[in-house]
Image (cartoon, rainbow, N blue to C red; front, side, top):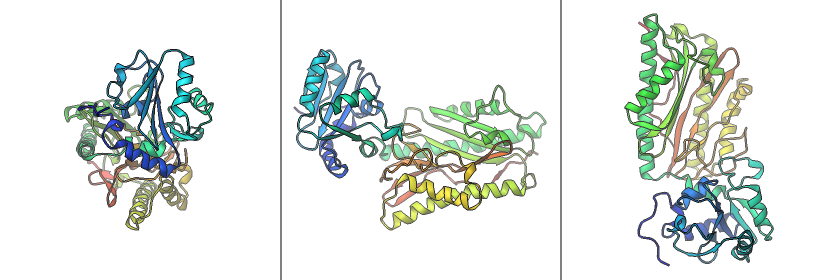
Length: 407
């Protein structure tokens, strides 16, 4: 059967040459096939990679290490699979499903599926336990397809990188404008409140063309000790001398790769910063820069880097300063078409992410120190791994606390 002349832009696995790429990677990870399962977008990774239409019944697409891909779908859902270019079989009853599934898997000992041992990587853990049970009943072992997902779902193309860079620039400009707006309001004696500035940010981002996956955090001083702070009602007023954490994210209208940034600003001058705050800021900044330097050094030597290793570097740097107990989340999350993507995370706390940072992946680097009742400080930049190694995509990353005069 010939390849369709046009495919949904998300049907990555149906493009010419992809089965050969998959076969090569299957050999590397020790699997005899990649078995993608979906029903009604329960597995959004498979749904996107296969360019599916609406589905309401179970289906299995097998990309084996030998031979051509094969499909098993319900008899009433041929239209949802109209772009599938290889052989297919259908079923109607559950008995037929189990019989056909056995035929589909005949001769295989191990397949990769969107699972994660002990759900260590939730963004990859998409296949229901009962479906895994059905596969194992055929005498077939199931392993995680995490490395395949990285290679086929989470790598940025040139257009994705360009959209991310545009979004990054807009986010930074908007963040600086928001600090300036808050400082001006504080100077008039009518300070803006956290919720009000959040709404201002959303409106300004939309005006500048960032409307996809948009949200933000504005946290005043001690409120920032909650990493995902969301004010109850209008929130705290941002007065003169306030230390403000501003976290904002989103992508361009029409899609692409979103950006995610966190900035720390003072509504005032250096005289408003205590030695304690300065020390905490420098620790967070140095943890961020230390993690990036580690990746750069390893890339320069041609050595692979796994996500957990980068987290450990930043966490150890904070430990040296007695602050690691206050760093309560992973160092960074994958960024692909989704803000919290399905590629490797920089994580040795919430999970131990052993996936390799491949050329083409993107992620955040965002160490923080959160001391309840006192302060929260975070610095976040985004990184794209190009052919030479890690490239910081956030324009003019913050080196010192930012000051915004109120007069």
